[in-house]
Amino acid sequence: MEPGPIQRIHNKMFEEGTPAYQSFQVTHEGSVLSNPVSGPAANSSVSFLSDRIRFREELGALTYEQFAARVASVCASACEMKGIQLFTAQQVTIRSLINPRHFSDSRKFLESGVFGFDSQIESFDRQPQLYGLRLVFAPEAQRPNAHALRIESFHGDPRSLFVEDQGSFGPVVVAGGLDAITANVKATYDFLVDRALEFISRFDARQEV
Image (tube, rainbow, N blue to C red; front, side):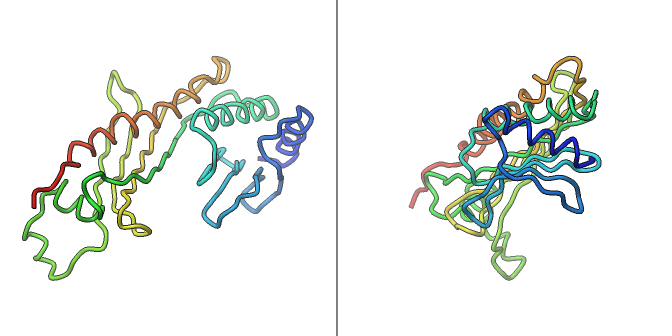
């Protein structure tokens, strides 16, 4: 997108007194609005690229409701400034780290608690440093959205389990309102919290010695 309209969006944020993003810059990919962050892995930004608007909130304090509201608000301003009439698709990725209750090592949790491996792993003649599971749920008639779920041991902390859900959603017609955008963020969050965590908890049982 051209930087002029994006700068006007940023100026409008300051005029309203509650800027969602503090900084504006133009990069080789496009215009970027961002906030200062406290750590090297943290990110709070929205990038206006040639074919999409990409929001990133990582290791910050926003709830998913606040993030969804921010996405809808910025998209509404972009539609007004750029005359956007249709978002052809929306993809939402939510990640979380959790600790199994009855396993001190997430690798052991996946190896024996989930997969039920015994001596089969000896075929490799070495011990894996990461275990993982990927499940893909395609759209259905009653559930037109798709979900790609990853469950993996986390290399940064053996106790933690890394869980990621990527929800994919269909077109949003701007004339009909942008409520679907916030609903899609919530649907992705709910899939991770209500579905994926329930699935994981079914394997998190006390181990007999």
